[in-house]
Image 1 (cartoon, one colour):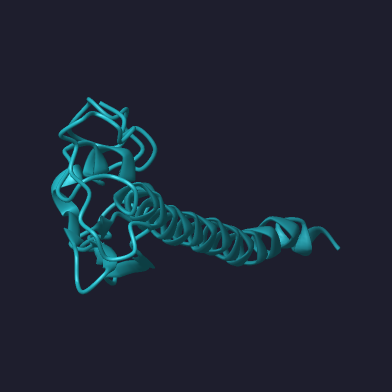
Image 2 (cartoon, helix red, strand yellow):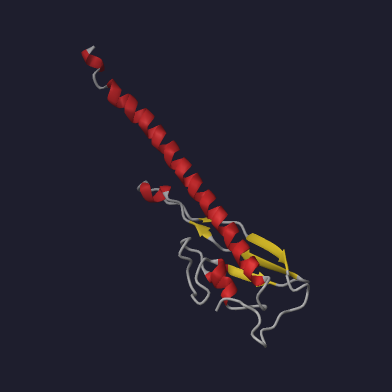
Length: 149
């Protein structure tokens, strides 16, 4: 029996390594789903604002990335998401908001020394909604359109 005294340590090392690899893989998959859902919500927010605001209103791209209407720059919700990644188009009575060029950085390579992995390129996210102006392009000449400033 004495010769098997360290066997528990070896078994724990083997099973523990597998357990932690699976645990970190589940965490990373959850982070990827969070990023996916956040980018989908960002396009939805931008499209929802774009249907009621004049074309190319400066607040649309800022609000899409979860900034205040007057703030520009990186998103406070999702690291690496910037208002420059948002494109707003107006095809035939519709509004199309797309986010492209987002790079998702994995957490696991930072935890394992020597493992170098490049960020994953997220697919393009698109939301298309009909214009609420029924095809008429709103202008803000009389100040009746309430878009955030």
